[in-house]
Image (tube, rainbow, N blue to C red; front, side, top):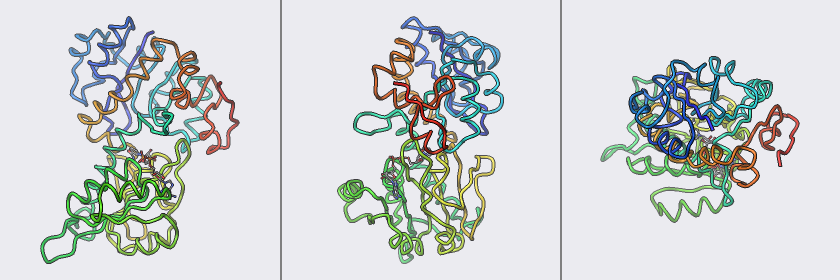
Length: 367
Ligand SMILES: NC(=O)c1ccc[n+]([C@@H]2O[C@H](COP(=O)([O-])OP(=O)(O)OC[C@H]3O[C@@H](n4cnc5c(N)ncnc54)[C@H](O)[C@@H]3O)[C@@H](O)[C@H]2O)c1
């Protein structure tokens, strides 16, 4: 198969879909790999390294889109990519379609076969291609929360870890999945007090086993939310219903009840956000203030640490891309239930039930 990767053009996105090491694996199995000039620079990979790995380095994105049968990217295609996508081309990337009707309609019109990393799901309900980015975003969430608590960044001027004789800050994490777990590790590590809320009792039990008395766990319900938000310094939104838009569990009144200058990091913003006050921001201008609370709603948080993120991402996605390249999309989707869950759009049809449900589109099963 001819496989291609392009330079990401979303604001401050420095990750790349294939590393030179990945290219070597594809070419050693007889596939041809096209890489747009400069595609890996933001993650520290030079064109010479791609060439040495066996890739053809081409001058622009149009040459990659024009020839490749499968495009392996990181983020959703934006203007500059969209018009270059061809009918029947396989697009493998993060798509988060459940929160983006316009993008979904454009991709349906273009007739692409779209595989979304974030909905590839194992039999035991793990999301192997979302997990590494969630690990990074969870860790970053605390880092960003601590930064925006500083006075100069609009926060109330509080050190999360406190100092002897002065109270530590309180980090509240909504959703105890991968983002939540990683946020909890860093927050408790820097000495903050931490509360995690989830609707899944087994997740709360897991946190209790791992952290013991170092953190509090609470069922996610209205009464607990109202109580805990009053004392939150950093609130982290980390909920997910796979393939669907994020549940809007926070209302304006919830944010109003928080102390002025506290920080809300809505990591779930890539799925539409879990608060009615959330709207997407970019690394260029990451925050805004609503109800006195600094909102940080960057949709591609791991993009800011590409040296870490590209390796973590491509280590997870490589095996799925290779399967498609080796066997073809249709037969690999028929054989692998994991990949089947990843297929969102197929030649003008919405073939993922969660995406169709979230966007009110007709669902046509692929299998
Ligand atoms: N902004 C970014 O750059 C970025 C990067 C990575 C991941 N994400 C997003 O972060 C979110 C979380 O990802 P994850 O990998 O941790 O998901 P996950 O599936 O591991 O965890 C989600 C958790 O949310 C819980 N949950 C669902 N509804 C809830 C509710 N009403 N109240 C409390 N908990 C609830 C689930 O039980 C689950 O434990 C996703 O939307 C993901 O796309 C964003």
